[in-house]
Image (cartoon, rainbow, N blue to C red; front, side):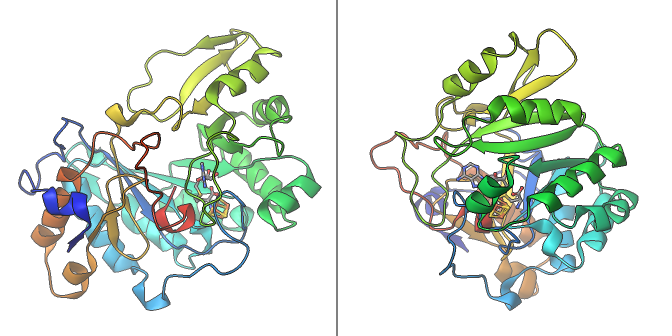
Length: 347
Ligand code: SAM
Ligand code: SF4
């Protein structure tokens, strides 16, 4: 079941119900579940315009299969399921997925259900999602300019994303987070505007350093906008004061002018936070990944579709955690970009 070099070196530790602790003492509490590799947009930093090799439909995990994995993870101390993709709202059974997962309880009580989405279709499905138990929402928006949006996502759909954000604001789900990948010569002149937009919508803006996860393999370290550059740009408008107590969260946060609003930066490349990582990922086709940048995966399909039980799922999950490396090593000369693009890994 394990594939790749790191996977072969791993040996599972612990028994069902024990916390998911890796060789470096990191306890895993966050399972990111990718529901599909398909998407309504084609963001340049994530997917190619054409030629993407889609996962075969029959390989996509069903609601029942996702629930089986989630129940094991919750029993092992996972407290948050984050639904992602591809675009999670493209799943026709999305409300039922949220309902089933939200009903799961771990040792510390009910799990949290978060979602990362591009916001398209949100106005029509959000009431159902909230009623089903969705607790948190992150929406991606890289630009507020329609022409730029169309170029960057290769789809002219900014107004639908804005409608999605308006629906999220109206729903009262908090904290609402808006994510943007900062890109040189693309949207790096809009960072202040994006923060002002988020503040006006009662949301927290978060900027993400672009990572080498585009399906087209075009990422260039020298061209990416760094955490320092992002902070410099924002400092021209606000006095930024660090918010302490980050814990395992990917975003560092700063308070704006000492007021109630904050901005976050996810500096995965220039200030990695691997030492506090509590995340593990399930791809839409049933592969467990212990890092965004893993070149190995742990295959749950033989267990899920071959008569395995919860103890078998637990064994694969523990093998995955045991194989986790200390960090992503983007800066190592031997760094290899994963074969899957971000849309097929689950961000
Ligand atoms: N479609 C949904 C969305 O866009 O929010 C969920 C999936 S998307 C892969 C999740 C997050 O990954 C988004 O915030 C997106 O901006 C981010 N992302 C995708 N490719 C990235 C890259 N190469 N570097 C940094 N972030 C990336
Ligand atoms: Fe789709 Fe999200 Fe990737 Fe953009 S970042 S192409 S919205 S999966």
